Image 1: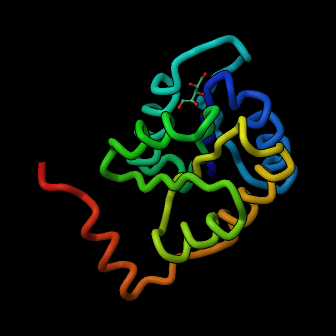
Image 2: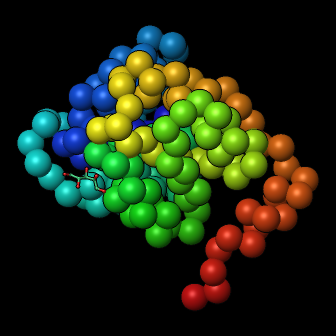
Amino acid sequence: MIGIASDHAGFETKRKLIEYLTGSGYEVKDFGTSSPESMDYPDVAHPLAESLARGDIELGIGLCGTGNGISMTLNKHKEVRAALCWNEELASLARHHNDANILTLPARFITSDEAIRITATFLKETFDGGRHRRRIEKIPCAQ
Ligand code: RB5
């Protein structure tokens, strides 16, 4: 089960990604937004992160115009490792090295076709473990 969320800037790319994912056999839970009308990305990012923390979804995809706002919001949740990726190599490394569990995309800076290719890479790659596990275990802060 893949969760997906975007603000208005990522709405159209999200629609195309959902089409691609369902066509490829994935189950998709859409956390909104549900129209191109202006809205605030935290309102969809927090529910996506909470769903991942509960284990209702295995991986997530978040989009906003730059990818930064949604990444910042998602990464406030200790269970989330959201990685902002704008090409396939970054998406591959985010899985191999960081065990990223949410892919974030800068919808205003990539085409929908690029978003699909980056997503496909993110979903097929896996975590290398080893020294990278030690590093990701050090990410959460004490507070
Ligand atoms: C919306 O205009 C834009 O600020 C938002 O999509 C995102 O880029 C914020 O980080």
